[in-house]
Image 1 (cartoon, rainbow, N blue to C red):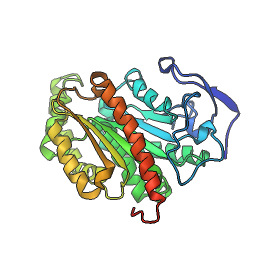
Image 2 (image 1 turned 120 degrees about the vertical axis):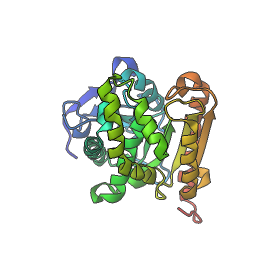
Image 3 (image 1 turned 30 degrees about the vertical axis):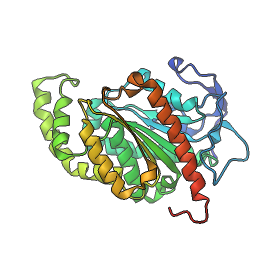
Image 4 (image 1 turned 45 degrees about the vertical axis):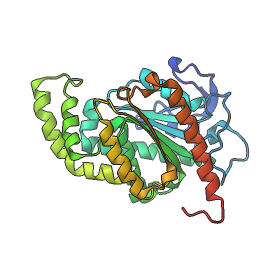
Length: 310
């Protein structure tokens, strides 16, 4: 393993974590321009969640801890995302995170190229830490969903990344996805105001939606791919103005055709704004995170049973 000298890596001031000592390996070096994902380590005082029952590291070194990849919504900021990152670092996870801006996500070709660079960073991270064999995702809105879909597509289709997919233990999906063609076009229109609301924006967005359309088929395909047999926790609201609850319910119907029912966990709220469920329903949200981890551990235990059918 290629490493540099030991250094202390700390999260940002808003994270308020106790510093942990980590190897500054190439995959997490903040000076590396190709590292689009931001690394924030586990809280030093947190317990190892031990997601993998099949394989455990010889000792509880911090670098063997499971990895949570947090993919924020379009236009999210580090200040907004850090509270979600802290949910995982306080539970013993190391984290990699990314926040895409509006214009970046709208460029399908650019975001797919960037996704491959990020996936290479993830692959290098895992190669540098051979005792880390558990990965989970926490994704938000279509901004996080688009990246997650591309990761899954590349993991299943590109030889150099195929070893990562079996490491995925689960995904928490907050306020996503858009799932019908009609809502795809409607969703692009709703982005006009946060993107400035100019005439040019309103004219360009329908054209952007047309470019996106063939890739939207892939979005649906890989979000519900039958090889994604791991825990899915889906958090959504009826009165979400950006991604209506009916869209998420269409996704759930399709997901249940390919994924075992016991791997699908749903939390539905009547009143809660888009990507604001943690703020409006804090206790429920944290309970769902804890239940997600229990479900992941139960699924790992099930895999060890002789009669297990994957």
